[in-house]
Length: 149
Image (cartoon, rainbow, N blue to C red):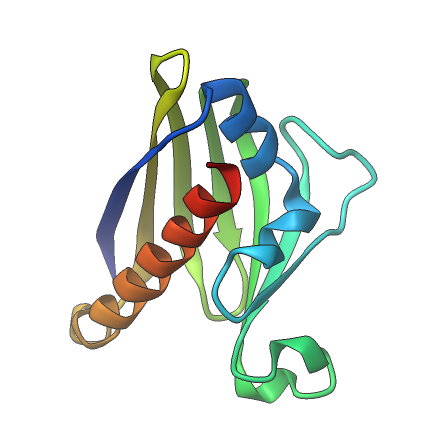
């Protein structure tokens, strides 16, 4: 198994605090994440220790009935620095690794959002999956930006 890196940044025409508040609203992430439903599974809603599950697949709206047709991503927040950075660990059966999102204010109405992942997977498998993962995240972040602008 190897650690494989993927990262995407996007400019959002919105204040950094608005971007942070929206990205850290775990339950609403399914509104902009491509073919994904997201749920917070911990009692706490923010900070280190928050647990989230995200199911991605063609029939994501019918989860868990058709869970065999997608990927369940289990995450726990390991670093929480509002309104700038959040790190998670992925600890599911299939998806393992870590993720980070960073919010950087450029001025009062423009923010750069950085998303990155370290995915633990066999290198050949990651090379095959990476273009689809990159495209899915790029589409999702574009949808996120449009919701905020």
